[in-house]
Amino acid sequence: MKGCAIVVLVATLAGMALTARLGVWQLSRAAQKEALQQALDERAKEPELPMAAIAHDDQAAQAQHYRRTHLRGEWVASATVFLDNRQMNGRPGFYVVTPLKLGGTGESVAVQRGWVPRDQLDRTRLPTLPTPAGEVVVAGHIAPPPSRLYEFSAAASGPIRQNLDLGAFSVETGLRLLPVSLVQEDAPGAASDGLLRQWPRPAVDVHKHYGYAFQWFALCVLMAGLYVWFQLVRPHVRARQGRA
Image (cartoon, rainbow, N blue to C red):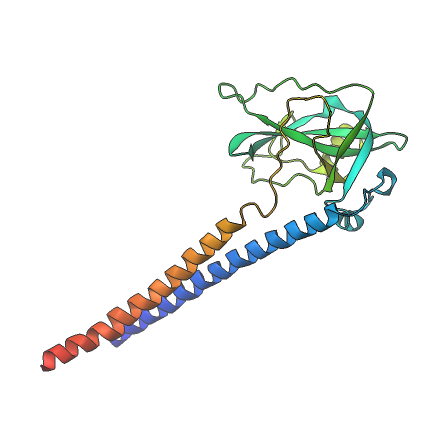
């Protein structure tokens, strides 16, 4: 019996340690998103970043993330890609990414132009997007490259992709892509191009992490309570009843 009791104690302590650790991890995820949102809000208040000041290396790029800017250049429509399995307002679809060749520099920036819904009957059928020729001015904020999702197969090379690696995309297209992307925002008075730009805020789902943390901590407490009841209180009560 002593050996069995030790096994139960060790299993309970291990379960409590795991669930407590998972609860702490969820709290850290919430804190990270809140800090990211705060950084976004603070940098959004800074003066617009001039196009000529956009970073050319990864370290400098991190300091510019979320800064607002206007880019002037020409769309490289032939290099447009559709990032699959991206949601906006709970609907599945694609993020549309098109390189913008910056005027007078020979360099380009990958622009996250917006979101389009997926065709419910044929997921390979892509919408025709109005992409004006000639010089355009695109408003938005500097951001890291599009977030990566898990992909089961090798990286695709067609217009529909799961992820986009800027280095590989630069080699593929022959464009000198800078190590940032631009998240396009709606400009007042601009003509509609059919793209949705209700970009999610980093901390929009922070309450989800608090909820998960509560569940893990509650499970930890439940394990402790069950151990105390079945291993300590209940045997003691039975022993007292046997002596009565």
